[in-house]
Length: 552
Image (spheres, rainbow, N blue to C red):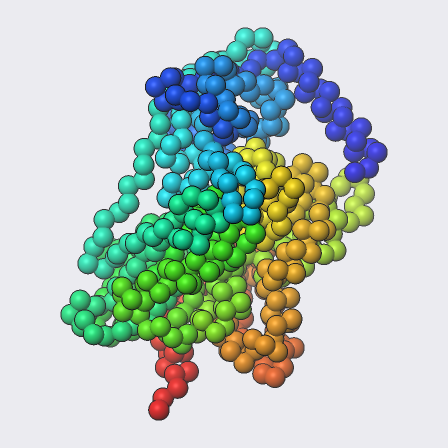
């Protein structure tokens, strides 16, 4: 950090310290009926201008969050107030001292953490997912206050008092139907790593005739993505309709069809008979493990492929062969699709990977992990310093900066416990810090990149382009022709930039040639674009399998 930066940050710290001494604050306690013992976790307070939804449901995102503030508590005796004052970091305002005076709807919330004594010897406190997918403001077991109308005056010395009075209820899992089945299992591998029971699961979409043909076996489509309990491909048994205007609007950004339209194809007589499966594998750091083995998350890839897949193959009569296992998914799921296919070409028969998270860390969105020294500003930038963005509109209008997103994550959780994107990558790809928590690739407040974390991300094989090239002599014969990657040319998160680099690297591979497919939506196709409907993609998989099946 430069001398000038040190002065600036010192001045800000002094300003906030003085403001804290004279500003209004929030004091949070809990009713004894909902908090009978000391609690470790994170306390939040939200300020909303409307009460159409609870304030906690209006906060926590980078796209229009109401002001909120977060504070760690350790073994908190909840009759003693937890104080949120001007020194506590917030988003989008850094401090309560910056919150404009006025009337607000205020609400407090506590996210409790669980103590994990891991097999690697580290003892940490992290939020244990309750099968909601690390949704911080909806997680079962969270304590929340009633919504209270308050007048806020930063110059007032009085305190706003909020009391946690209720516990959020358990998740309601949708019931099984003729077409959709759900399973959830205790993973022995993950339970051993984390030191207590850990669970993974799947939602299964059955093909037409599954019950009527009890000896028939089926290929499987593994759909990767964020945690969810809905049916694969958004399959819905309800009928629907689509106007010409709705169809035109949909095709401007994506060819994906509505769930009812996909269901119409899936249940028709002439559609390929396959089983579609989504995995559930939330970790204590994110709603999804990225389907890799990780020193922070544990052996999730091993658990999925050696515990969950064999169970699915037995229970749903799946063909246990690589040429009968296909992958797809978008965004996070697009990266997982690519990672599983590249890392395990012996296990999977082809990946249709949609708008994947960065597959080349020379373009980690707009950050070059290897060449940049700071995630927030380009190397050598001079005042006025241009901020680096992490999202944009399809027209190119910048939306959110790396610094702003990092601030949001810092408010949502210390020690990589925000449950958000950057922390998810640190947990999945990064080394363990001295304190037992993931070592962050960059400091959330300064943006300084840790080159030891950069090296770990690459050397452990999470830079998929580097992994592809380094291991081509070993994996090439089993991997050639199996990768199909699709992304819009104006992806909202700049994900097309890394795909360009992977395509260039793949084109140079020899013995055998990679023979991968790369396709870019143009013009101005955003995040979420794909060139085919889901039904068309299933037909492509079926045709690919037929073309690559070795017949006697």
